Image (cartoon, one colour):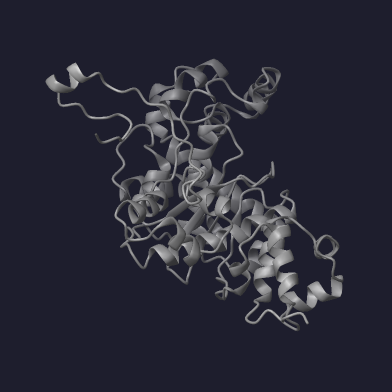
Length: 395
């Protein structure tokens, strides 16, 4: 006689299915139950048998305990999706589940650490500000001044977020039209930013970080019903783009270094400013350094050079990385407060997904980290010098 899985949480099955991009129909076929049964399980109208739960775990590659873990009430504030209007719903569903996982991770880490206090300016948004150049320049200036960012290029953008209490992560979104998303969580009173790992451009990621920062600071109180208006949402997205560009390229500093508003002129500034040529074209148009016809010619030549799929220096510039969540897990294990096994028991998520969200080296929690070859200093030099290992080894 089969045993019913006591404590099964239907919402976790929905999460797991969406996280894998699988429809209810496909899951039913894979597990060998009816679609109606999947619906009943997900809506807590019926509990599956234990062997069915084992099948769910195997097919979806989830720990069995995941399906027994209670869920928290979702935050009601809107999620701002980069390219929401063109990203496929299945990609947004997959990403939104990972946002909820990120909140569970932060909830767990909050038991052990005092994370940086939230320190962001609050700027009142009104619909009258849409299309206002003065608002764009003022907000960009206010943000830089609030965080005491000196003139010139913007420093590490993710580091700025984390130092000021905004939590960041990166995932493989596997959707060309979904570069980043963010939400202010009332549950934690903390904003979350999730970035795509699928883009190779460090400059594009810096722009995405600041675009989401603008949503957090300026747009978080906009009700979802207004964002459902397509024209309004596009106007809000455009404003976030313009303010992000103004943060990256302050008017006086940018104009003072730009010798000519040309593709080659922009390219000479790219490495120093950590900003794409595309963003400089848009910024130059916003500052009236070029008119509509000049901007059109620049975009035509930009496309002719093949830069739409990748600009020069994209492979040279180092991509910024989150550190706060990763270092928290590392400290737990280094100090012997929690082992990898204890972490996985407390957070029964798929190990690869947990490592990705935490920006941990693959295998950190599963014990499958491959050791790297390291040179060993000869004894005669050990006797004469106090050597610090570059590889973190202690002799």
